[in-house]
Image (cartoon, rainbow, N blue to C red; front, top):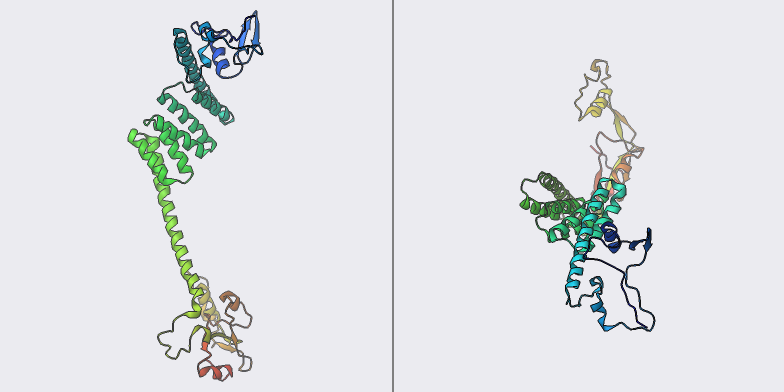
Length: 366
């Protein structure tokens, strides 16, 4: 019995393959092929019909016209038929790639809902590897464009860079790579790609506009970095000041080391102050503004120009120590602290001869 190892019927030298060229191209590189027979479409998988179990392939299989489509990379072409097969396959793949590209372009025009389908078409066209470098560059650039619109910036950069490798004159690829980099705040790289595109097309308005945007944003970014750096440096100085304050050097005028950090205390005078006249009160409230007393309707003639009345008696006046960790705001909110126009605090050294007199209440401010 004759052993069989046949491939499905084909006719590369003719116009048709499995019925018509359109279905053939899609069948060969997409879904399972369909062959029209007796008015019906018969589907069968892509691949050879396997020989019966136990059978062996005849050495003359190639002579019977084995299809070049399934030749491996090391196969040596020896016949005109095989060359024709390969030429036909190449033409078919090229035609399929072109159609996939056009279909991808249509999906892009149909809107965002079809962007994933556009990417699929461009990817399948790229995988045909049947077009020239410049045409492949367009495919990568088109896919970069869709990824850019979807916000897939890293993928867009990769596709655009591949497009530039294949065709260094692809200006759109430079633009799309630069725009994706710009979206990721990679200003130096984006500026470099913009410059490369402008070298290819100095009059390109889109590249000029993008280059100006990148340059402006880069300057703002650098300014922000400088401001941030200065703020960090200031914070470090202040932080170090707190860290080393216990070991601060002696003040130049403090010959006896009486006013070192651990020897000083801070006080304010409680229950002591004076009542301000209405005129003085208005003056303080309006201080720092462009409004005068006359403009706000204040009548100085009707003001009681009395002497400031002192509050508190010698028995109620106390010196209140300020805790080191208290904030100025918390001290000023104390009900016993009457602010004398501006906050006043007294620094006293525990090592001075004055300290005992001060603590005993034998000293009052002049």
